[in-house]
Amino acid sequence: MDAYSITSGSHLKERSALQFILDERRRAALAEVDNAKFSWFHVKVCLVCAIGFFTDAYDIFAINIGAQMIGYVYGKGTPGKLDSNTQDLGIKVATPVGTLVGQLAFGWLADVVGRKRMYGVELMIIIVGTFAQALAGSGHAVSIVGVLIVWRFLTGIGIGGDYPLSATIASEFAAKKIRGKMMTFVFTAQGWGNFTATLVALVVVQAYKQKIINDPSVNELNHVDFMWRILIGVGCIPACLGLYFRLSLPETPRFTMDIERNVLQAADDIRAANSGGSFHRDPDAIVQRADAPRASWRDFRAYFSKWENLKILLGTSYSWFALDIAFYGLGLNSSVILTAIGFGSPSNTKTTLGIYQALFNVCVGNLIFSAAGLIPGYYATFFLIDSWGRKPIQLMGFSVLTVLFVIMGFAYDKLVATTAGTNTFVFLYCLANFFQNFGPNTTTFIIPGEIYPTRYRSTAHGISAASGKLGAIIAQVGFSQLVNIGGTNKFIPHILEILAFFMLTGVFSTLLLPETKKLSLEELSNENQDGFIRGPVTHIEMQDGVYVGKAPE
Image (cartoon, rainbow, N blue to C red):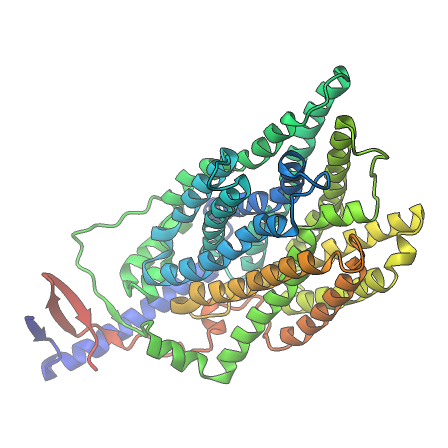
């Protein structure tokens, strides 16, 4: 190893001057990002990030109806169900398990190798996994359920990667006055993905149902096998459309500045973004690396060992955990609940036409849940997030959800005993969907993307999101194992009561979090920004034929 030092006494004044210059340029560059006017570049960032969330939600929630279709084709017992709860559970829980892995892995990788380098990789995984699901078949060694579980797990890894990447990229490009709206816009795509999956299912079911009506002599379910494959396969289309734009998105200026420590290049990138110009990086340009805090296991422990930082990680993680127990526990089982309460069920599901009618009614019910609750909730958050704030919305959401689940759980038997009561239950269910999204489902995504320092922002968001998916897995496993205690779907009211308890605990975890509205990401990081850059790199070593800069120990 060859090494030389430029820290001789004659260079001390030069180092001090360079430190001041780099620190001031960093401050000026950050101020330019934080105070930028809303531009077409911001629109591009929102759309590019949102298309991934649209695809994620489509793939996750399409299986809600798809599993019932698969049950009609491959189940040999109860119509619309696979041969065991374990198979149904495996198909539904495989994606959340993969998502948990993807959130942790991609969250860490985005902080290590860069947001841009990882952005698009997760979408490629989603495309391959989704296409493979649509073509899945069975053989002597493995059933179609086993094949689907494997591919849904791999798809989940790609979906998981989208959470920390999209949140981090949207927050790091956003001006502080509109950051909440930009991140909420990205997240609203989840509602539209859910809605579109249900709408596609409705169109496909109606199209094949019409064939049966035109020819009543037909009495087979082969067409249902086409239906679920079309439903899942359509999820590839938005992913393919968004792939190019993801690969063309530039690196975020905060990553360039604080992790690559290239302040001058970051300043150029910010000017290009604000002016609508093209981004250019000269590979032969001389780079002046800044001496700034660097990510390491030692630094990570030092940062999160402080209670002021640890309590935030606990708050974002547990709040997401509690929320996803309800959001996915119900979201992936809304078809089961609709069937249990007899909402629009046909009188005869033993005939082919009756089966198509049952699927049609389930699609209509899910469409009502989505249009009446999910999507309006997202937009209520969108319009109030930067004025009311994140913490009040999250506290309000958890509080209202606690009350709604208490009512639906303890009054369940009386509500579903009559047609009017059933309609009231559906209304309360829609309200729950509304306040999940006008509440913690949106804010648990936003806050972790804002509140951590740049070098750990994606990692900490991934940890928080993975905690949420752990809640989703527990909820799905719990729902599957508990729902039929005492008889088919008899335990549903008690499940709703359990969800009320978790919503109440979410109120207390929210109290650990500060308000983040209209504050810069650096103000929220709990790190002193005065002298954040300690100077330029002053020691250069040759390692494996490459010069690398190091600050003095």
